[in-house]
Length: 173
Image (tube, rainbow, N blue to C red; front, side, top):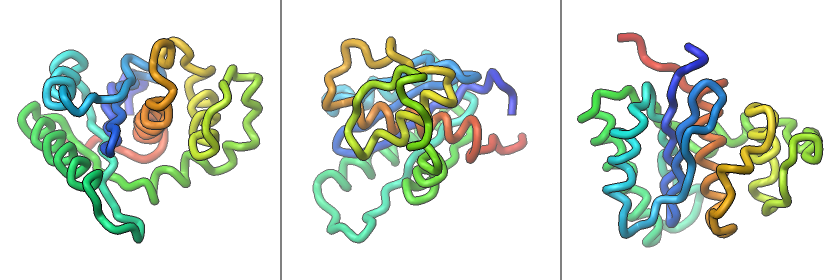
């Protein structure tokens, strides 16, 4: 895979995170407001012209489906449709696949060395891995974002990095 490969990652959920990583550089990352989801997701395809979309599929992980599952599935369907319309290859993966790979050994990464701020326990290993893979914590990306959105943005960025470095491979034409 080319180092300049532009990957658009989407982590659907009650709050949907999305990010674009190109050759180890964060081009965009944020949380998608429900009220503007169609416009924001479409704009990402138009503005960033990804080479590959990495999408986290929904799995219930033993939980009972609820309203968040319905919304996540709507986002999944919409992103799949966008990938089809814009002719962008799509790889769908699951948290049970990509997150363990990104978390493996990450808690041994010295966060202070990479400028990783304090984040929730569930996001700490992914934040540390992000800082390692990106050569430092992408502070500009999180500046101005509400702290409640950080876990979703961290997940989307980590999913994009996983796709870029480890998991997703662009299908051959």
